[in-house]
Image (cartoon, rainbow, N blue to C red):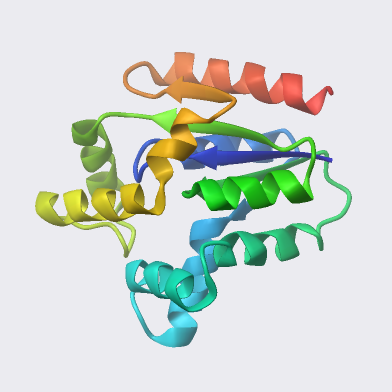
Length: 177
């Protein structure tokens, strides 16, 4: 089984990697979804829950929950872990899955903010200042270091078709291993 972790700031295009992986028969495990599910249980917003989980259980908690979920998945050639945000999480994935690869998606702030405005997910702010605060929280988790340590970085700024082609080629090489 091949496991790829995907990192990037909100609105960078992480979910496109997941969409393409699904087309290739892959399975997606979203760390953001795990946090959102926990936020519903706690009756909190997901951003508050993300911080509180780490305060209560340590930096590894979301990764630990994700790893437990991955271990229940059978019969798939590719698992994509969407939303890795801290170097602690990367370490835990690498410790549990020796062939784990990490990729990151990059897009500038203006582009990402526009994308968030269009997708209108409940945890996406419509105010630019709130968006910047969310970026700051993500950076405080260590996402900058995660991106810097990625096995591959994809730029998602302009041409969607070229971006998809580059991602598809990468996913094909991982699946064929």
